[in-house]
Image 1 (spheres, rainbow, N blue to C red):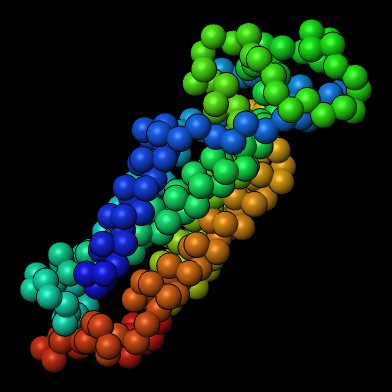
Image 2 (image 1 turned 30 degrees about the horizontal axis):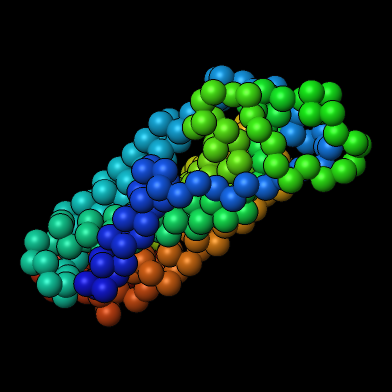
Length: 269
C-alpha cells in the first residue's frame, strides 16, 4: 500500500468519525405523507445484530483471518517484499489489512453521507417521535413537511431520520464478501476445492441474514437493505481487485524467495 493510500485511509477514517460518531451534522429533515403505513411500525429496543456485534465481528473475523493468512504465507511460502517496510510480516499485514480497513472507511463514509443527506424516515419513526396520524389531525395522503416530536430524546429522533441506506447491510456484505475474495485468492491447495466455496457461501449468507434482521427489527425498509448490499458488494469488489494486491501478479509486489521457492500451483492466484 502506497503512502497516498495511507493518507486516504486516514482522511476517510476522519470523515467517518466526524460525521458518524461525533454527530456533528444533523440529518436532512424530510417530511412524510399522512397515512403512510411504512413509518408506523413499533420501536423495538433490542436488535438482533447490535452495532457493537456487527463492527467487532466483521473486523475481527475478517481481520484475524487475513492476519493469520499473511503470516502463514511469509513463514511457509518464503515470500519477499519490495515495500519500504523491511520486516516481511509487517509489510504483508500492512498491505492486506490496510486495504481491508481502507474499504471499511470508504464504505462507512458513503453510508454516513447518504444517511445525512437523504434523511429517509425509518419504519419506526412515528413511534420514536411519539405522534400518530390521529394526533397530527392531518388529511389522508397530504404531505406533512414538518412535525414536532413529543419524544424528549432528540438523539432517537435524529437516528429515526437515517434509514437510507442500511449501514448494517453494507458493512456486513463488505466484510464477509471481502473475506470470501481473500479465501479465493489465498486458499489454493487441492483440499479447499469444496471447503472454500462452502465457507464463502456461509459468509455471504451471514451478511444477507444481517441485512434481513434490519427489516424484521423495523430499522430499515427493504430498499435500504438492498442498496446496502449493493454498496457493500461493490466496495468489496473494488478494494479486492483494484486496491489490494491479493489478485495481482506476485512478481510486481511479492516475489518468491530463491532460497525457498513455493510450488507452481501455490503461486497461481
